[in-house]
Image 1: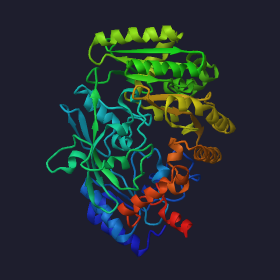
Image 2 (image 1 turned 90 degrees about the vertical axis):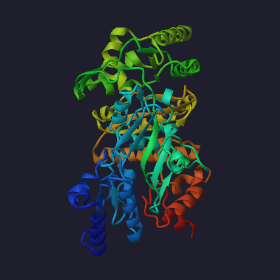
Image 3 (image 1 turned 30 degrees about the vertical axis):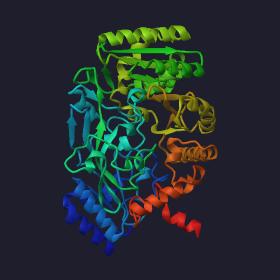
Length: 521
């Protein structure tokens, strides 16, 4: 890392001119802090960045990107850092943009949307929305994650049954392109208008942001968006009691009621989920694998392993559907939806989980899906998190792909920790779409992490051979996998070159233009 050469000194001086000494660093200790993730350091991370910058505004970001073009140094942008390998340094003079100072939020109560900057968390949007009878979906990544980043990256939110994929809720966008130009979409593109509308005029450029795993900052930095909010029939403050991890959250029974019930097979679970979707009842609907019940509930590793080895969750929650009914309009709506759900359960032969068992879990964990901390809870028992498949398609697709994912994961268990053939199904839009997740935990050691990386490699090869879009394969560079998906890399390469002629915006993650051009010679 050329920390002492003239180009490094020149870039550092110019960054200080833009932001001030306090908000620019090339301190090796700070660089190390921006180089840690849930994998052992030697497995994925090969080097540290040379600069960390903390802009405060869209204009600050624009100046940084213009400087990157002038002196031809690469940059990436970081959110909460959960998927750090997608933004970490892979070249000299690498600059990581950390927008943590960009934390402003505005709520338009009448038109039901929030205008947020990059470092506003889901928890903040949720809390401010609740004060006004509104809410926003929160993802499995956790409410500590950037709401903006999650809206344009993945977006598998716990309330997706009602609120859909997060990207569906994207309205006006303010976006600094890799060239340094500022692009405003939707109603923002009309002078004097606000963020209230997402489409047009002309082509809807939000399509460049809407994907399973986004563009990783390779098409610029989104600095401000408007996100759609939804009606919240509950209290203005989320009711909690106790101190984490021994914390409860119980919503008023007049407007919220949980039902957990089981079936003999996973196939029957999926049939019933479709029936619930057809009825359009409920605020949350999930099929959670047995491992989730232990992960979310346990207050310590000892408590987790005691209940897991005793097979408490496996015995009581295998092939379980979890439904939370919301009385959006009134208490009468909740009463009506209860009748509908009970009839579905009776007609399909469902078995309600005993109340004493439910009460051991629901107050501590169920409402975590309203404003969640799921990834944080998930990581406690091994130190790191992974998945053997996460396809985004339909409930049927998830069901079809689970067996191959289990077979793949079995090869790596151990060192992956036992997950009882994890089989999460998160439906979106009343079960018209769904995510299937085969999640697991593993220990953060070099030997284990190398095995998990090998497992991920097998998954990507499987997806390529079978033309399956999943979270993991969508994070692979398109110059590697694009030919297996309708040659999408050719189209994306043209877009990348048009928006980023100097190839400075996270130049290898979405698509490695240099490698692609060398391969074509």
